[in-house]
Image 1 (tube, rainbow, N blue to C red):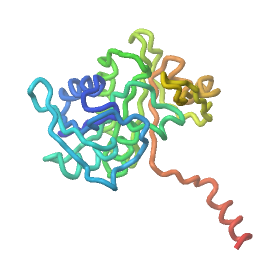
Image 2 (image 1 turned 180 degrees about the horizontal axis):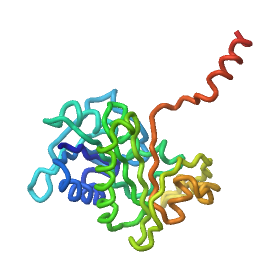
Image 3 (image 1 turned 60 degrees about the horizontal axis):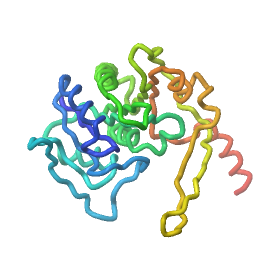
Length: 254
């Protein structure tokens, strides 16, 4: 069995290493990951320049393929060109930082898993809810459990990727595991204005969710409350509930 592993924090990220160590107990794992950090690139793909790929090593041993591109690029080229056998599952992570709510749209981690689903493969995205250095051991073990769940329910989950967010707290403080929807609240957009030593003005982007943390039935709210969240996601962005209404509006306008 072959798992394709990727991320958006870069091929040498600790979260990816932890994932590789744990999932290698379950399957043969091939790492195809960005050469440098690609956080918040969303579902971008490279089309205007060649996609450079090199064999990466760690401690003089083959680590995987480093791609000068995005997480979605890594999944595409990993499946079609770099894997010498059929891929059974795409796993993206473990991201340092939560990917819940509106952040799902910006996340390179989640987009890599979504790309796997687009190509017809079972896919999993895993994120640890912290921006600091952390121990990814428990998150990797939980990811391993999720691979079993996904592979044993492939038909029911076909066309979807599973997005998992894990609180960065001691294991005994995790309140449980919940299947919840993605939070839909807006984000407070804020830029902090600063001046560098040469008196050039620059801006540092900062953001935080609004009321979503109080919505316990969403990924953002449940994660903030101490639960591991599981959310099935898809790439179809169509508002199916508005199709008929919009058709009626357009009949009146044309």
